Image (cartoon, rainbow, N blue to C red; front, top):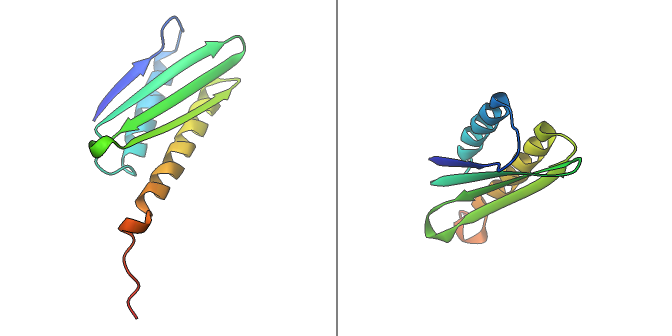
Length: 101
């Protein structure tokens, strides 16, 4: 899977980028056939914003964005939203097994 980080003009530590990479790889296990992930870091004054976009075949895109005072909690919250979206995606009515009585 291809991972792209976008953080123009923001001084992010190497450890934060490594944490984000490990978290994305772990979250990708829940998104079947994910082909790419884009992680955008943005900063406006004291507010830090993290946006994660997962792409998969057939045009499937999962997008999660959160803001917080610090990078770590914002990243964790965005990953939590992404994982919830992925679990909802797997339980769509067309993919549920039929009840057999």
